[in-house]
Length: 421
Image (cartoon, rainbow, N blue to C red; front, top):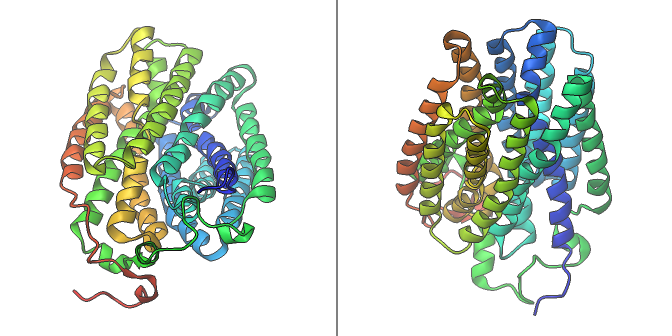
């Protein structure tokens, strides 16, 4: 019988608020693009290139974070990530030249937010929970949405009233504030508090031991079709979410005649609905075929993006935010769970880290392409249509995942040796 209280829930709460703060920083570019254009005279393509660099380094921060978790534990990894973010934001307050934006936002903040990201959250979930992995990973995905819901309207209000530096200052305060519970309450493993993972019985079965020990070397994983199907579909996820909508939705809405407050409110609504959608996705991930869930999410997203260029009225913008928000981060629980199921829990941090890098590569391409084609064509319509087409391609990729892969995974002690071909 499970105890009435388990320290895993404390770790979950602390990880949630850390990811929430980091995710709110990732939502900032959509707010600051227009003010930076006005103050410095930089064109949108140049600013979008800084966002693209940041998304690439954000993606690289995933495997870095996974490696740090394996070596020094999630507590130090999260503290390091939050510290790097806060430092980068503080230095941005003195921004004067475009190269500084590339260096600070593009590299420093990108790596920091990548360390404090879903890769670290997925690893924490599989360390602390024997059951409910999908639900917990879904909760961590909801942290992204909660960050948007809480901070995007506040950042926009501060930016409109006091300038973009006031919005950055809010993010600095948030990162420093959430570092305190991480420092005080975060623990690396259940054994640190004399506990077992949540849901584990008094004795560990042979099957559970084998499941813990299963892993796949990166060199072996990249020779499998499932790895590339997961990476390819997650590439499209990044293209259609963080890169395009996360970066350019607010500027697009402003150009369609919506006010800054209305645009930010729509993003906040999107975040609110994504909390519901991601938690529901986590629950569904524990119960249904993850491949079919991914296909449904990508198809639903493609349909909503195809309609976005034709929205000019407030009620329809809110309707888009409501519907799109339901599956913005809903892809994370089934993708992480499929990675663990196919390749083994022992290699989840590394392999999901590289699949996450594919996600952010897609995001980076969309972020820059959005700015570039806006400069050339004067609007984002072509980009949103391309995102819809890619969404339907992702449906096909998700359904082709075999999803078993247990013969390729081996005990973690053997991971240093290359697998036979």
